[in-house]
Amino acid sequence: MKKSSNTQRRSGIRIMSQMIGLVKPLFHIMALAILLGTAGYLCAIFLTILAGQALLAGLSENVFSVRTLFILMIALAVLRGILHYAEQYCNHFIAFKLLAIIRHKVFKALRKLCPAKLDGRDKGNLISILTTDIELLEVFYAHTISPIAIAVLTSLIMILFIGQYSLYGAIFALAAYILVGVMIPLWNGKRGAEKGMEFRRTFGGLNSFVLDSLRGLDETIQYQQGENRKKEMGHKSEELGNLQKDLSRLEGTQRSVTNLVILLCSFGMLFLTLHIYNRQGIDLHGVVICTLAMMASFGPVVALSSLSNNLNQTLASGERVLSILEETPVVEEIPETVDVHQETAFTGADAENVTFSYEEEEILRNYSMKAAPGKITCIHGASGSGKSTMLKLLMRFWDVQKGAVHISDTNVKEIPTATLRQTESYVTQETHLFHDSIANNIAIGKLNASREEIMQAAKKASIHEFIQSLPKGYDTEVGELGDTLSGGERQRIGIARAFLHDSPLVLMDEPTSNLDSLNEGIILKSLRQSCKDKTVILVSHRKSTMNVADVIYEMNNGRES
Image (cartoon, rainbow, N blue to C red; front, side):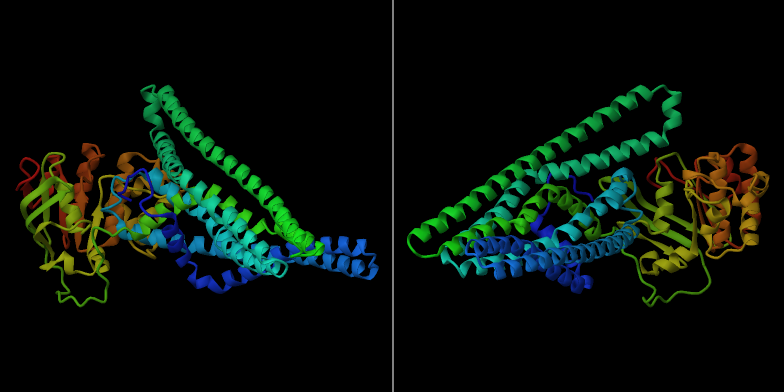
């Protein structure tokens, strides 16, 4: 995900081989699809060949053979339809099954990468990967893997068939299949690889722009920026349209070249077999059958040639998806199986000579602090001084470069991740609300929480009365991103989550920044009363918030203690 180069960082062959590796659990169905597809194409090819046989039999006035051949042709036509349907069913079953598997893998990978590697990421591009990029892989799994195998098998069978009549004809057929099914797709793929990747990135960028525009609609209207946003969206759409035109132009060129080569190869087989016929190396029957076999057997390799039109975007999508699956998290989670010797009772938290940097920017240098059990510890300092970073280090969203962070005298790097999350409640500056009811949004703090527990948590966060005043009370939908609520109301729901989570260590990042003085006082009073048996680390730039603290740490110059 950190790569931002303009070209794919790995070859198309490598991307395809890695994506094919995901088919392993469904290999038996893929094998069946390949066999059905090969049989279906052979039915279509020999339908044409039998028509030639019938014509030759009619010229020789062999009525019995003509009747038999026509019956066989009808049977092959029906069988072709059945086999094609069965092949497509198998391929699409595999495709949609694998897309579900890939989505699970991607979400699992994103969960591991969160929050360190995804903080500040382009959300529109991520949405594009999770939706359209993964959806595009359906083309690969349903219309790429088996067509390649079908083309190889069918072509080999036809080469052997033509070889029965003429060795030179078989060699010519091999060359024609390679030219149409291999050389032209490689040539077209090389021309469009960079355009395909650029199209996917531009598409993701447009998604991000639209998402930002929708989220910032109020500000856009307030500051009369609608026309500017409209022009920018038009510019981005035009850029995407131009890329689509370029890809369509490449597709048109490829189709024209492919059709021309097929026509030349078909006539080439005719002239070659006529030449061999003149030298008495083949009879007239062989000339007709070899030519018809050549003309009728391009279907599988044409399918390969057409793949390159969509394959550029598919491979670009595959590259983006594989990049997420392969990206290593900044912080590796510790499974519960790890044997950790720590006391059952919570005994406080501390940071010891911590130094931490975001890439080249140093945020904390030799910073130390201690949160005693049952006390409210406050970290005070100007915005950007590293206060929020300290809480994230306690949550182990990142690891320190120097020093150590301890929970109950155990380094957080040694505590199983699930245990660490259970020990801590974290209230962020911006509370994210899901498009669900208020009750369900609060209940995120505790699985299977009862309505009574949710209400008690809301009372502690001083939002119970407001919720009760709503038409549907706790069942009121908050809207997308909680846009039906004010910033202060969202913040208090976040605080209610923390109370419901009921952990011994409560981390609060500017919990009253969106509240007026009255509500701030209510929240702080509730915090003092509700957290008598808890350890609270409170981050704030407000001096008024410090009144509730037992211990205060100042951050000087935003870096050092």
